Length: 130
Picture 1 (cartoon, rainbow, N blue to C red):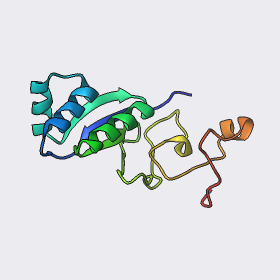
Picture 2: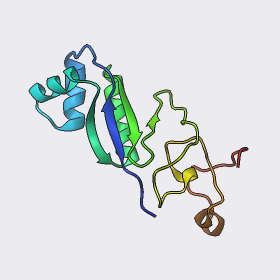
Picture 3: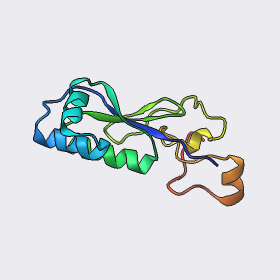
Picture 4: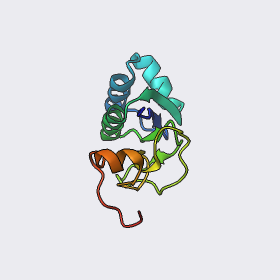
């Protein structure tokens, strides 16, 4: 099963102090000058097509530096909220990824063929709506 890729977004302009510039530079690999331009042009994409764990780490680093950032699933195009609560279930644009497996929703388990045969994926628990 193919895993979705995620995008890290700078959602709003920040004060852009030294800590913010260093965080953007660390996440994007851009120069300080380009990092400043990226901060000034928010909302903008900082990183594209990266795994969820990398997107989560990048977003956490940006937020710790005071940069408003968010993660968006490239398949279902939903943005994960920054308060660690999952988004409501909704349509996923992927033909390959069952809705309950998408990390951008509030479902925590499913009864798809894979889960029925091999057991639930790590992190999935019983969900009362399923």
